[in-house]
Image (cartoon, rainbow, N blue to C red; front, side, top):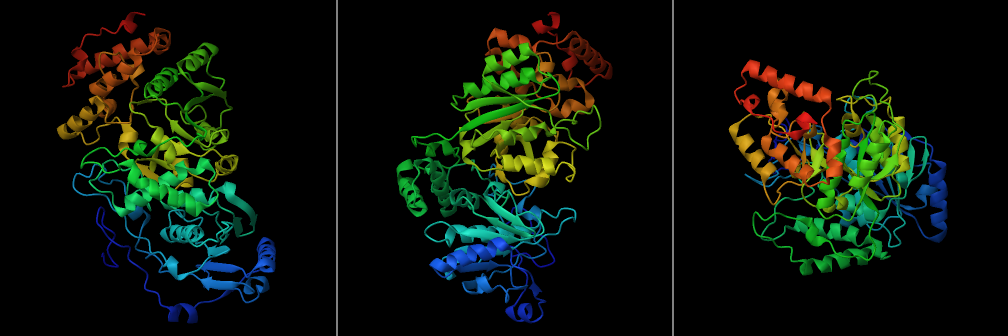
Length: 580
């Protein structure tokens, strides 16, 4: 266990350093705070007490003086005892920049957030929790204690609820409770600093089955000779969600049913076998409403990419809908081509980033918020238009919002995301446009400030085409993955200059100094394989403009003048688009 002075070391199996608190100093020295009970709380309590004595669990409420809460005191109140996470326990310990996803040296592990012994407590009708709020301090949302209190409340609701499943939760906080755990759709009422929720228990159970942070993969890459107890629990919760459309009323029976199915699924896999959750899918008789979605706005520059993306998804055999959100900048011929490639077209009005400069590349990138208005779908997987999908990715629909791959630091990459459409969430995103400062000026930075608690998919789901290490080993490993057949990657995310803006002969990122970190002829050929499999009528939307051909020839001339050692500038161009 690390010392109080030390930071939690990456990749180590450890427990969080705990605050040294005792009952004696906490009760005697604590200044109690008196508050007026919210009207919705007194009415809820009085209604319950007519039927039976209300059972209430209090979390982090030791500082609150409830002696005047006459309705509350008629019930049976229990303070939930837990040890608070240490101030030395940092967010980056839960959300490290890198983990050993491939398990080359060891399996990734997470630090432990202290939890109460839930078996010590009976069933509750209501949970009341006081949430820490450090707003407007920088990084206020990435607070381990704040997350800890949310997770304790969530676990109490799932594990200690009444059989009728009607348990509610009340939060006391100046800040809105975390939407990542308690959906805004489940909020009943907000009165000042009091927030009443009636959560969807199945969704909540699914949430708490996820790893505590991005310190571990939510989607395991590798099979094992025997599934760990922890992984078995994850599988059971996955099945519970899959069986939800069967409308089994008793949640405990639903959970037991999922557990009994485990031996029938032959889940044991040899060491180094790819762990594929599609093994767990079976016909429930009712399919959830789900779709793959992309967005185009302000320009037609990515139309070819979107057409190729649709074709790549269809080739994986998915039966999910394909939906594209476009604005008025996309001409009718391009709309027809997008529809012919497989997209269902939805027209949108662009959303301006109020912090962006006029006519800048990111001026309207908040248009991606429109994804949350697709409420005719239960879940959508957003995919950027500069990506091609290589393997069936339907298993991603079984993960909650927000699930994505890692990027830098503690943030996720918004190139592929699991999103749960909600008008309520959309409204909150719109309200926060002027408040939140995006670290990169774009939607990725914004969304990372809203959804700070997210679930890590392996980078193979959204594999970035870059070579930052600039080593032979890195090039060898990544190019092997780019070219593997059958595919080992779920998708390739083409950073830098896009394949359709290059000649097909080689990756034109080679010819530009600051773009060479994105150059891969293997990945380039992979994209063109998808292109070549498309109908000729779709391929013509990937032709080069006269101006683009001039730019490519100029870049090649400059590369020749600099004598770039890779000598791609020596390759003769055979791409027929050069002369179209």
